[in-house]
Image (cartoon, rainbow, N blue to C red; front, top):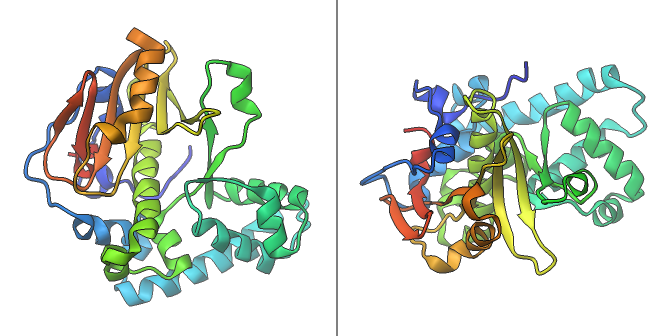
Length: 287
């Protein structure tokens, strides 16, 4: 059993099943949700580790530094032949925390750490085995292509990611921190759905979509019957048709297989965007 950090659904005591709801073509109906990045700042920088959540914000960063050092020092030697120093592996994790949710560039990471790209690739595999990273594969109608294209890598907990890059709730909510906040907001949403996928009634696989023209969908949820849900994530308080470009592409490409597209955002209400595409406040994932 894969034991992830706590989901928001577990924290608030609800057995939310947003994935089952979305596969049925129904958006979560939310009204008057707290608005803006500040409303979700503490949730995101606290993360889902029970021990970390019990600590004061200034103690949390110390907890995560200790946790990472302990995992890399104690558990790393148990998973196989490790050919990289734990301090280098910690540096790599910090670099990935600053890029969480991005497509991995092994060569660029190698240049920053003075390591070859094969070592970096093997090291990200180790961090994935230690449940510090999650590998999100690309979605394609060609089933074989899903196995070989470049994945995205996410830190498995936004509390850990925020601690590793030095972001607290006030910095996350600051007006000039849009790119950092957007990166953490997206990771938070994706990890919430990754956790929910472990208990959804319908077995699903999770991917992201990016085509040759760099049109993207942040998360593609696909059932074994081929039904598809698309998720876009925007930390802004407003959203519209321009944010649904990738979802529209998937809808038109898949026809009836496309059940619904959702833009998760920091706004107040569930709103229709266009045919089978909705904007949903972030709390719709667990309420």
